[in-house]
Image: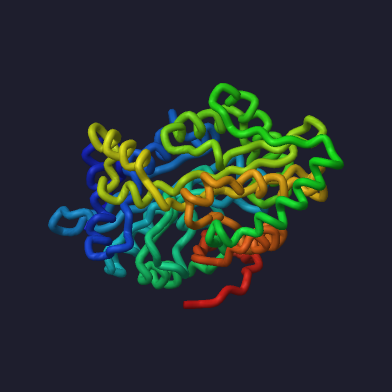
Length: 389
């Protein structure tokens, strides 16, 4: 076997072939979009490269066939806020061969040590923490868009290398007709009567203001969490512009309290079922086929970051206003289920609020951590107790 660093277009072709070998007989797997994954390692598209580095590797067997892949990355700016420098590994795929997995882990760990990492997290994303995060532990159903899906045997690879479960990442699910809209509607009516509040549905012509207000709420609401990195309006503008063909304005809003940004709803239609036939390649005519399927799709699912409330307005009933906003005939007839993704198990406040919406834990991912240097102590976050399969 040999491991090569992915740098040329033909190397990327080998990289993208690996998961098709792993999941050839798995009816649940939906291939991630190749261009989406590859863009994460494009310095012109991923702002994490401004203060970070990344490398991508593919493993070939003795016959020259791709049997494994992995990426390594480190964000030097984010590491300034941590007790010790942490690198990341992600997009790991490997056939069920221990020697191949060992070689891939050794490659990325050596790469990270050279760049000053004292520990490594994986499998995680290089950049945003709301996608491609964690090793699937529970809920081996067809994945949502940009959600990691892996075989059960991957866990043994991480355990063998001395990784331990470090962070619990939850996906919560519930039927849209199970959300307590009526109770929230009554509360929202009282809030409107007593306060100067209003909601604004997303519209492209107001993108600049939407991006600015979203960032104000998000940065204020999440700054106290570990690994927090402020987002900028330009990031939101890019996301919304790229998502324009699929987004539904009925799922996106900003709530204002006394004229100030107070909360947001950030949900999107889950497009993964529509992507299954394209096998990771959304180019050329496939784009037109996808857009046709999106336009005529029925009984879809909602997924997303969920909701954010500015700390100054967390006791003002803003959440009720947002839930009431979602209770439209369009939403209830179009979307069967609501998925709230990448909810950290140690974020007990968010979990408590979400459970009141009638959702339950549907699947669980673990981000694993390993110390790379002597004396580094790995202290996992608290995990929420969930029923096992």
